[in-house]
Image 1 (cartoon, protein in one colour):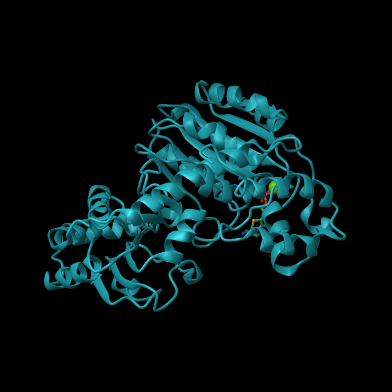
Image 2: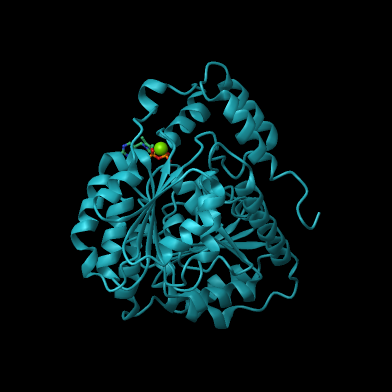
Length: 427
Ligand SMILES: Cc1ncc(C[n+]2csc(CCOP(=O)(O)OP(=O)(O)O)c2C)c(N)n1
Ligand SMILES: [Mg+2]
């Protein structure tokens, strides 16, 4: 059984609005309970609509022995420290989420309209139940047997008395093992040496240092991959990105918006150099204009400085089999730290991975906003979680001829993917 608890930016408000209203007849949860009780290996999926139903989700997952995968906008709905939470689902997602959906026999979707059905169980594989406060979302993405138009918390509360605790915990134990292995893989991948800095390491160094109340944003670009996979959310952390439109440019504006909404919470934005050149640099001027009004001045803009429109360079390699087209993909080199310093912001240019830890510590204790201009290696592939070693090798060999970055890719990319297959700490 898998639980899918995704979140849409608007659904939190919708869920709250509905929570005061009456829910559809309780015979529905009884039927839902029957289906869920019958499962042998279940999942659930969680979206933003599930925000605020954390305790109920945990109780349902515990009763059913389920694991939970999260939609990207629902990354902050359930803590990544829960051993049965498999992280994000989808192309930018994690391997344990992919396996959870691939192998489950029951799917409970709560507050999510996650659209990529290739990452859901095969049709016919799983009996499925959906809870969504918005009737327009019901039955949109999967052939659900039971559809509940209700807010997540109310529906799950009504459902819980109808569930029996699953005595056979083997499914859940398997999920927990996969999750442990996944986080070990992420650690190993972040340690792969790169030229000059492995972008995963920006995220893995920060992750354990994140204040419990941090708000994190990511731009559309390679940062979205590492935001999805490498940051462990916990506490009251919040996070967002352009989840539906996937547009470039929101990283810094979202962070500024977060500071106005929560001036006492530290905010961190991960933004590509392309997005910085598009609008992020101008938004640094907005930060200069307003930061002294914020109760806590910490706003960190971490730039992935790779001189490339890297996410699309990789998409073109993977999907079109095209080598890097430098004329459209290579960016002018810009001194982001120098520009930030000229605005009176705290600024650091980082070219040595061993300086990352101190850089994050100093930005997190600074008395003003900081720009971390991190020189990252463009040869780190954002490999989808389901790619097997053979598929990965086949896809990449097609691309190597004629690509100016081929030498770096062989060095960094192959070594990174290999971490999934190499022995881990516990064998
Ligand atoms: C407005 C807009 N233009 C183009 C795209 C297509 N696109 C997605 S990611 C990306 C490259 C981003 O480059 P950068 O900001 O440097 O981040 P990187 O991937 O290099 O880390 C592009 C062009 C988009 N999503 N939105
Ligand atoms: Mg870039």
